[in-house]
Image (cartoon, rainbow, N blue to C red; front, top):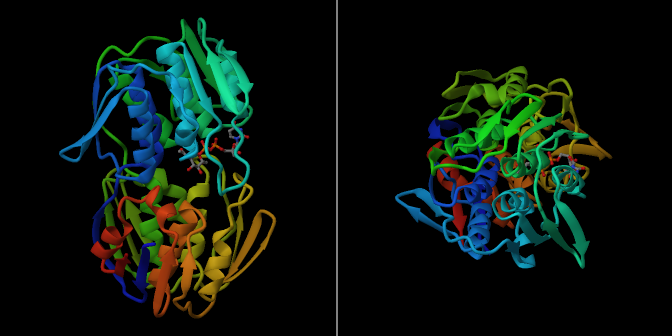
Length: 417
Ligand code: UD1
């Protein structure tokens, strides 16, 4: 199995263009189904989760191929509405295909999506919103059998602003007759990106980015040539690496407004951060201080996906920082791995307290999940000696090439087969 080896202690310097966003491209790939024709996706990151989506599209009878760095999808030949169990298990986001297949085919069949490292991740809200739009959904032997009949738009409210349930509802609503008004929708920038893509297809979606999204059901009328938004969590990861190791980096292509809670935390910790709608610059002496409590929350709150990398950045800070994880139950699995490097972290239920230590030392560690793996990259950049990171398939789900990207910023990092 491959490992990533980092020899820490190098300052990070230079400019990096941030990859396209995993959490945007996955729903957008499902949304390509709404238009029975060709769509070109630019800045599409090459991730194993994208490969899993491509396998689902091909199973459904669609074409999906890389051409000159873009992913070209043609769904004209779509001739199935079922997703087999082995493809559903590959990633949790496969459930986003449910709303899109229903909108296109009027029926869908799939099993529950893959298990998750972060604790229980129910899909009750996905199912209840689709039922509210008129889908009949039976659960039989672990399979979800969905018949749409006539989907009809209406006003519906989510009991909590789930990102995935919002995306599924928007996609299904595109296939409804009449208008759907979705209240308490998630406000993440990736929902706005999905809306922008759907509009490019000719769909009528408004309000994304606020908590009320309106969709006037209408079939997609045209294909699109679309660039996926930059990945704010990959950006947060590289900023945290530079904050922890020290250095001066500029990330391009990224919208600083999407990262305001993360950059505010890094500023409070002693980094100099500036940015606008196209770039973020960060300068750090690697000598950070502790900050006020970090509580993860739905956007625009502090992202749960950046909790682990910020924690890793603060391992050598002066003082103690409290983290409260409010979104997922089991999101501190990276803590044991960070402790192997000398970190002082105590965890009780949803609260973790990081007390800064003078030095971290390189160690053999394993990724426990995607963002936990990213935290090991950050800690490895700040540790003395060599860190060998195993189980890197978790990282490959969401980072195109962290060895290339951190290497471009001057980290001493390599992939060892
Ligand atoms: C998305 C992101 C993930 C991020 C998360 C929260 C993608 C591909 N993934 O995941 O990286 O960490 O948002 O920002 O975009 N919930 C229910 N019932 C449901 C659905 C969700 O109880 O039917 C709960 C979840 O257990 C969790 C909370 O709602 O506690 C938020 O989950 P949600 O926003 O749905 O996350 P995902 O869309 O799965």
